Image 1 (cartoon, rainbow, N blue to C red):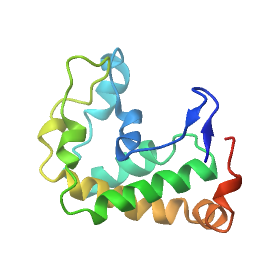
Image 2 (image 1 turned 90 degrees about the vertical axis):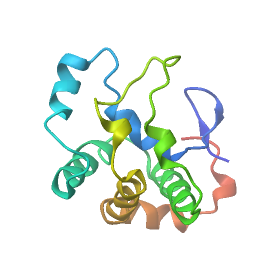
Image 3 (image 1 turned 90 degrees about the horizontal axis):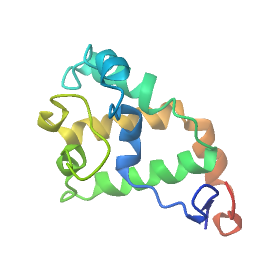
Image 4 (image 1 turned 180 degrees about the vertical axis):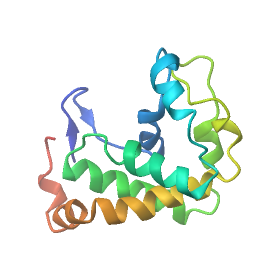
Length: 139
């Protein structure tokens, strides 16, 4: 089991981990304004958002692999509620850009993340896949 050194807890990602780079809480005037230039419903903008933000977050090859696999599991689950990941929680100190909670097809957004991650992270995913995961104790 991979252990997150920051929390000392098992690294168990969820598809929401792909959204952290879009969190504009307390950065509305910087990152928020930058992200407002893009419409996640438009294929061209969506690809830029994913490749330039979501997939460029610094992660180890093992983290990428586990994150990719958790997204694969969610996508294969026809009942998985991707919309819930975009809804604003007033109890949390985080928020996505305006309008993202009304994205036309959240599942498509995450399917695109999966498709593009498979290309961009291909070498890292292959490297991690060949390893014995039972030996993964630290990031």
